[in-house]
Image (cartoon, rainbow, N blue to C red):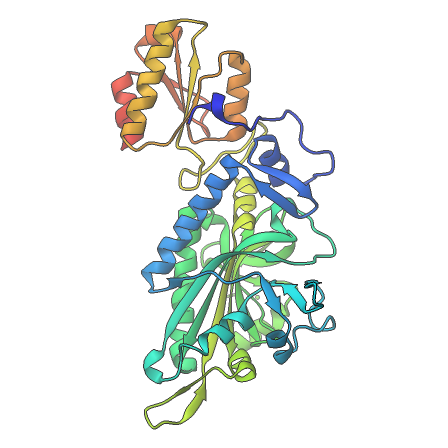
Length: 420
């Protein structure tokens, strides 16, 4: 992509009302636009990151046989009343509205009820189970205080997956497998080293559930984590009781305390929703049983914001290659030298032919210093500069965003290195 055609621009200063590092850098870099507290629009660069995160998640979920769908955000109150979640006393973060005919509607904050209701049309026999369905869908939560930038929003994209099994044993097998799936997802995104499987309060579905918490200064939870075992306990959720229930011994572990942000969760729902909404199947003998369910969520913007919190410095963002908006930031310093422009364009075209995604800074009115500052702020993994100096030195100047030193390499070697 030619940077001269990119309608977004970088900013030297972040919004005055934004204190979180992730939102400040993403706004300054032209990735997002803040509409209001907890509500952000995703601009071309930001959308590319979002789609890369989704692609990793989709790939890992499809590997275990999950099927993608998408449900509506607008929800009637009838099915939510059956599980007692339309009540403000039970759920206090609904966004509600009504049609012109006064029919009450809600903007769904989660989708256990809707998907359970849908599956009544497709599940009747034990032969229909198990199966797993997921979506990427916008959620709305009427948070009292939206804070921490993308880490706690009022409108956000979520991956929510739901499992449907015949019984607890069948459910538990998939539930355990999902721990590994989530681990793979966070490893591929680049935050695996900082992310811990964390035991926490599982109410109202089970005594305990598991979250995936990533160590970051912008986090909202204090966890006790073991670096070697990659296991943690949410300190607020009765750590001593968890120890006792799981038979742990404050000596079996080398726990440290740290601040963390939740990037994913997995819940055993049991038969709460299937019983309330009538989702049953007949076994081999024709006897009816409620379907055993599970719920598995990942907040996509929250993951994006967490990546920025972890991978950034005083100059800007340092994107992991797996989720970066582009792999290469090509910078042309031509000073009206047509040879430099020609070489830069040829390199751009060759990388594109090789399938390498490139942001080509071809802007003629911008100084070299501004181009370098923009490149550091935007944070694309590889920077390659074509200038009179680089051509005289043998080709192009290549460096990684997270390294201070650059090297002059031939154009041919640059293409080979960046396309491998």
